[in-house]
Length: 90
Image: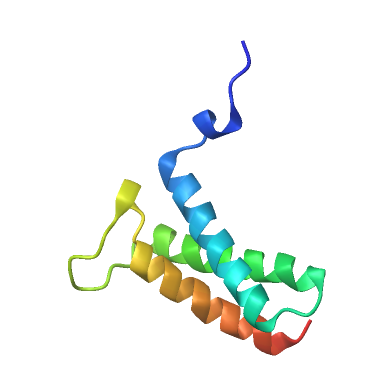
């Protein structure tokens, strides 16, 4: 019996990967010049999302946290690291 890859993945992992992918794609549209930058942007966005999720950082307020993932904080950290990655000019 073959299982689909998405059915094995936990919801929090899927949400983090979706946030990182969306942020990296938007950053590549804004600042990207080469395909390699898309990979660098995706790794930077994923690192920002994972940093927030692992550290348990939560802003004061009632922001959405689907599957325990702080969405607003993850997006903010992803964009912070994306700005750093964009300034490296790889």
